[in-house]
Image (cartoon, rainbow, N blue to C red; front, top):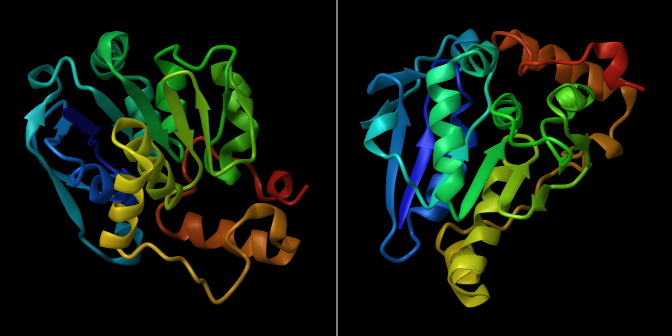
Length: 229
């Protein structure tokens, strides 16, 4: 089973690495980080003076027919990819034969730019939810949303949940449960502020500030006033 994870400049690391840690453990899986130009790909957290990078090991054209496609989100890099006809055409073509075409966070906007979300329900990062209609989709406040073979996951960490669901569909619930234990994914956060609906306007505004301080809000981005409504 071939799994292609799109890599691009200023992507969000966990959007890709979270699903990777699950999907790479599916029996007989071959995972490729694909990019227009292979090599180091810097992530979008360099606003925090970090220099974390992923390595794309294949060109888009090297993996034309993956069984699973994962499109991560990011900061301003997402907008650039939305305007790249080379990447969008690869995505459209790969989607024709894929078993699953997925996105995490603002990666949904890349699916939308390729014309794959027209008329569908979808999810994305809460800060960008108001922009989904611009790519033809209706926002749903869920951890992940399945529409046929297209699955969109919400912000960043939701990609892990999505990947576990896919593992169950491909293999079995027993496999997915075993993989969840293998990565010891047992979230017990000290706070209940991991979902937009649970947060006060003050926490939402602070989260917007922290995201922007890491080189801007995931793009496209809502205004702080929009996010608190």
